[in-house]
Amino acid sequence: MTIEGKKVGFAMTGSFCTFKKAFEEMDVLVKAGADVTPIFSNAVQDIDCRFGNTDEFIKKAIDITGKAPITRLETAEPIGPKSLLDILVIAPCTGNTLSKLSLAITDSPVLMAAKAHLRNEKPLVICISTNDALSMSFKNTGMLLNCKHVYFVPFRQDNYEKKPNSMVANMDLIRPTLEAALESRQLQPMVLAPL
Ligand SMILES: Cc1cc2nc3c(=O)[nH]c(=O)nc-3n(C[C@H](O)[C@H](O)[C@H](O)COP(=O)(O)O)c2cc1C
Image (cartoon, rainbow, N blue to C red; front, side, top):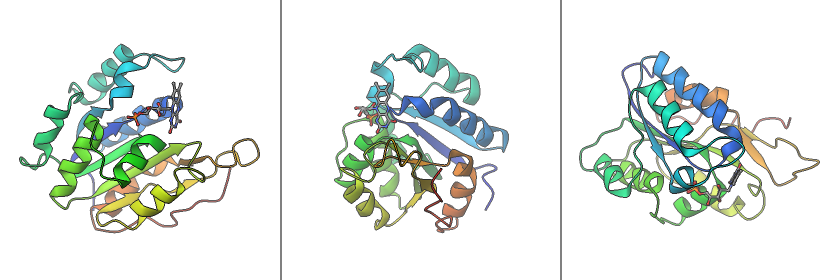
């Protein structure tokens, strides 16, 4: 199913090294005709780092989508009752957000958006990027893999020699993963050969 005309939530969490690519893929969705709503976690709004600062991230999201990002729990909550999205992608998704989501913790705008959206039994897509994917976050990833309506952008070990527990999704596959998820299908293969 094509993404054209779909209402897509694009939720960003604090894996800042992947932001450049994530914004490129946000742009891919907009250019494909999706109606994209950006959503930022608290960390994205609080942390200024070598990969950019909050004002730059907000400006970039507005430039691409024409919309100010959702930055508060109370503005994410209507995604549920008003059924505002067809599909929600968390890209990038930190170990922190992934683990909280697996335990039904709802203390950031991104987690609120996910909870509200899942209430409507619509697809949620996770695009992981975390150094502890194969250690502390592994069991939580496993729990989400086994959850209804949750799909993963295919991922891989990105540097198994220096970061043996790290896994990163291939962000080039965000659009095809969303299009498969809209048909209730997980894009395969989900685990890619290591870099
Ligand atoms: C420069 C920088 C880069 C980070 N990169 C990552 C990352 O790639 N993956 C990750 O899981 N956490 C990363 N973190 C840690 C998260 O930002 C931190 O766990 C934060 O609490 C995440 O909150 P959120 O999931 O609500 O966005 C990074 C932090 C900083 C300051």
